[in-house]
Image 1 (spheres, helix red, strand yellow):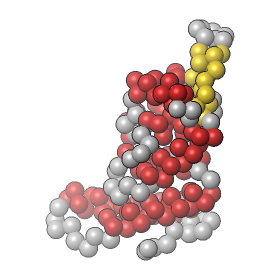
Image 2 (tube, helix red, strand yellow; image 1 turned 180 degrees about the vertical axis):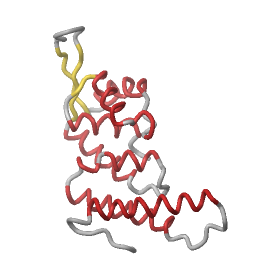
Image 3 (cartoon, helix red, strand yellow; image 1 turned 30 degrees about the vertical axis):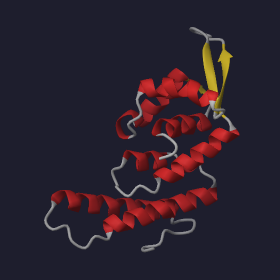
Length: 170
């Protein structure tokens, strides 16, 4: 994938609100991204100066009211474009339990409406391949993946179905 998992997570959280490093890590931990998104604390701190150097975020020193001064980051328009690209890439993952797909789904609310619809449709198409498998040949893990794919398809229908509808088949 062209946009790393940690970049998507950092940019997504910064698009929700400007934050300093500790706040980013806390927001991710609160959502469980350290578990299901496979985004570690050290990766977040390493990503911030790299993203600032590439122009995807800007940082500004902020005086700490109850502690040390901190650098507060916010996503730039270039960072928003990179974020949308990264989320769109992740929504095309076919495995229901893929951490990349979960990360894309976690930030659907930040996508522009057209990109959100396209992303949901791409995710549904990827899942139809797994859910539509006729036989599991008695393999419990294939049966599990199929059931998870079907459950996620059902969830996508309720999520976006109120607006345009998620088709049952491509």
